[in-house]
Amino acid sequence: MRPHRNTVLLVVGYAFPGSEPLDWGIVILHRILGIGVIWILWAFVTRQERSSKRLEFLLYERGLAQEREQQAAERFRNLADSMPQLVWTARPDGTVDYYNERYREFGGILPGPNQAWTWSPVIHEEDLHRTVDAWKHSLATGETYQVEHRVRHADGTFHWYLSRGIPVHSEPGVITKWYGTATNIDEVKSAQADLLESEAALKNLADSLEQTVTERTAQVRALSKALTIAEQRERSRFSQILHDNIQQILLVVKMRLDIISMEETAANVEEFNELRRLVEKAIDASRSVALELNPPILGSEGLDAALSWLVHHMGERYGLNITTDISPQLSSVPETQRILVIQITRELLLNVVVHAHTCDVSITAQRVNGWLRMLFEDNGIGFDVSKARQHSAQMESLGLFSIEERLKLFGGKLTIDSHPGGGTKIEMILPVK
Image (cartoon, rainbow, N blue to C red; front, side, top):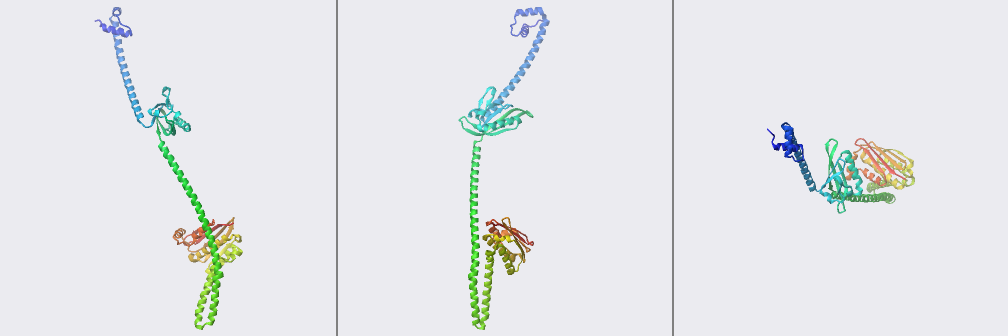
């Protein structure tokens, strides 16, 4: 059997690609090579056909993959172009190789050779250095890239943007792509600026109010101090009036009563004696109050002598057993402070008489480094200091916290240490010149 003519032509076509097989060539091959060689060439052609089909299949599969990639890229571009942000991608080395169509809104983002885009011209010069540093840091560490900076629009105006990029890894530590966005945060920044401005305004207002309160407080304290000094002067004047006027009048009344009692009958003597006793009691009380409010010795001999006199006087009058340690250095304390200390000492001793339920009191008074320090101690029933402060706010105090406030006006301080059943210790300090 001879091979078909078309088969021979096919064999020659594969054996001599690009040439036209001629009938005379086939005849020559047939006659020279014989039927066996022709069949070998036929097998070769058949194998080539099978290889060609496999190649065609591989090319077809590759074409499908490329088509799918193109479709995915097209979907990504459509999605990116529909977003309100500027969308970008970058290579592992940091070269930006894609921007969505939003790039046209900016003045300076330009495509370059090999799909490399330039972006630095659109960054505000004050933000460029830290933007580049942040991008380099992310490229070196693989950390998320994030920075806030001002970006120039096509109209030349700058706006605040939040740029953020996330790496994609093919395997741990190997970055294949960066995907990022730039989001306009102008409104957020404007709100933050307004908030900061409001906070600054509020702070200035608070500072101004605080300054005003401080000034008013200083004025009130100065006024209160002036009132306290005026009160002390009025007490001195009242003491003087008691001594020079009321006591003298009462003495005259007593003398007249004595004269009348001698002239009246025996029936009226008892009534006149009672009146005289009452007048004597009034004279004694007024004399005692006058002396306690403003001891005459206070102006002539100083605070140390006045304290010693007051302690002796109140001990006798109220039955107190008072031990003292009074420094002679107190003699040179200024008059205003001398009067204040005498008044406070008298009030503290009266508190012992009324509330402490004891007769034993100790007083120490020293002058150290420009400060007057006095310590009052008793072994009485004591009291709850916190409750006493609450009562003070309700006008039910023992007077201690009034003393405390008066001392503050002169730069002093009162410390109270007491508890029920444990006695009371009160320390007073006052600056003296």
